[in-house]
Length: 173
Image (tube, rainbow, N blue to C red; front, side):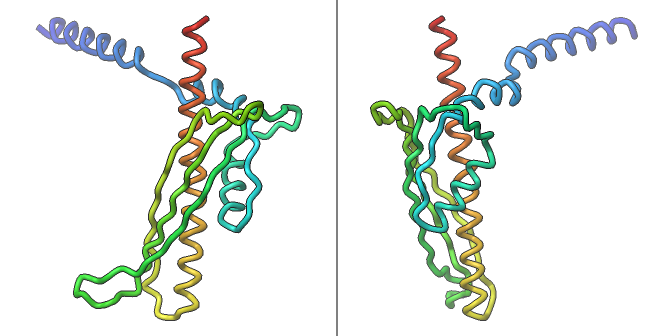
């Protein structure tokens, strides 16, 4: 009787482990297939503090190798806005809703054709501080955090793009 349960348990374990291993994609595998492409990206020159933080955050995700000549150009536009929110009781609160949106375009350097594009939005709530100076600083820190978050999300979107591109190239071969 116990042997029967052990056999059933072993079969269930074997079947579930074989199914899970078939669909498992490791992050190391994705990094290996995409990291070389990130070395080939030239970023737009920043024109303000938010774009500077975006560039710095994006560059920390990649290992820049000066030996490679850029093949891609990452162009983007960051739009930032903030608004006061209302409290539950209907009075003006000290909360500030910071919203940021990025329109990004990955272009070939040879002909500047757009090969990937997208729009990403992010929100952050700041405030609950009574002085105007600290409210302003809190809002500034929120926009800087959003800029870093958008850099991470653009990196992930491009990583998916390069991974799918490598899979399609392997299918053609």
